[in-house]
Length: 453
Image (tube, rainbow, N blue to C red):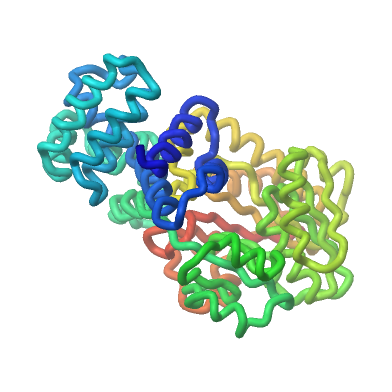
């Protein structure tokens, strides 16, 4: 059996069995298996492609097997999903996809599963992707439900994305967004300001469309790049770069300012803020409740000279422990992550509407705590990697209602337009900014800036 397929299966199974994160597990499995660059690329495509399109493949498998997927042994189902992806979305030869899947089924399931796997995949192979798309849609009722199965998103997520786009008057972009969620993102790099010669960084790839410190990796291993620059060049989505710069460059920095990254894990924005603070003579403190993630923050900060304290406090208490202590606060709030489905495709299958309700309560508590820790006249950036209205405008409007005239919205779009290398096509009234994968090529990052009066 080709090792790339075995690695892909192991990661997919771990995602199902133990809620593993593919983006964290896959690199270590590739390294452990000693895959060459070609096999590593195949394992990556098979893993992410299968996880992204799992919902669609399940419907195809159900049509062929004449049973719901919950009636199929989970290990066999993983093999079938992996095989379906090879048959319908890659150039892998049909005989190779089927034969390797049958061999894999013989290893992970009973002997009887091999015949079942062979039959299902050979049936799938006899029709084109377009034919299966048509048949699956015929078996599905409702406009959102048809889009959900065709583009492999839960229906509730489709409805949430439609609502978020409609808030900008752009609901007609929904299918473009769903398609963008299923395309592998480019590798974006951030060159930390003041720590990297921009000429050296420019050799890494083309400049980002919007971030003035960003580049798109032209090729090679991104881990090797970050190691070569000692952590001063980092892998970071362009939207995350813009979110951090919106806070640090909202207005000129005054030497001696104190900044806080309240929910700092895993540390990408903290490293960028630390570099920006160093340039302006400010001091950054990072906070992360979970010890393991706090360790990731410390690692991320290692490339920035100087000491950046990393606290391990409950963020909802920061207003009590550090009242009116900080001039600028980054609140990158815990969220559903629906804005990063390109990078973490399994997240779409793990989240539910109940998660939104629970997280929005936490987001409100963290906002209030951050507001309490902010000095009068200070700036707060509220950021989520989710476009769900309950986590974006819902949280913002709730905070405005609670704090009244003491909380002032700043013109976030104007701030970002002053930072971005090219014009941003942003909807809404300009007080908040929602970035989009299909429109900006970034994660769906939401950014809102406030001042404490």
